[in-house]
Image (cartoon, rainbow, N blue to C red; front, side):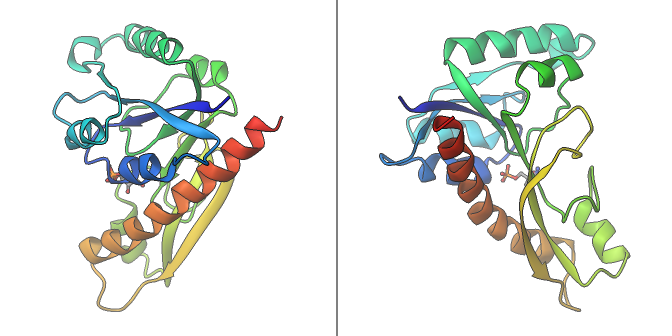
Length: 193
Ligand code: GRF
C-alpha cells in the first residue's frame, strides 16, 4: 500500500508543487493532503489545482496556544492516515512533543548548506560572509531548529554578481530537484521496512 504524505506550507508552495508532481503512479507515496497555517498562502490554490485535498489551520486564533494548533494538526494527519510529513516553507516551529510523535518521519528543506545558516535570511548571511558556495539541505526534523540529521544537499557556486534575489532563485531551482529525490528514497526505504 502506498504511503500517504502531508505537505505543510505557509507560502508560495513551489517545493510542494514539485513534490506533488514527483509522486506519480510508480512512487511508493502519494500526496494525501496539503496543510497551511496561513489562509492566504498561494500554495493552497496550486494544490487544489493539482487535485490534492487542502486544510487550513488558522494561525491567528491559536497564536497563544500551540497545543490547540497541534491538536488540530494531529487530527488532520490521522484523518488522512499520514505516514510522512514534508515541511515545505512551513514557517512555524513544531513542539518537541509533536516531533517526538512523528519521530524520523518529518522532513524539511532548508535553503543553506547545513549546519551553516540555520534559521532565516540564509542567503543574505551567506553573501555577507563572502561564502563561495550556497545550496540547500533536506534533513530530518528534530526538536532543534534546522538541526536534525542531513539526508542530502545540493551545492552551487556563488558568483561575484549574485545578490539575495539571484541566489535564492538559483538555490530554489536546486531545491525543486533535491526534495523529490530525497522523498523518493525516504519513502522507498520506509515502505520496505
Ligand atoms: C524555500 O526556500 C525553502 O527552502 C524554505 O522556504 C522556501 C519555501 O519556498 N524553507 P516555497 O514555498 O516552496 O516556494
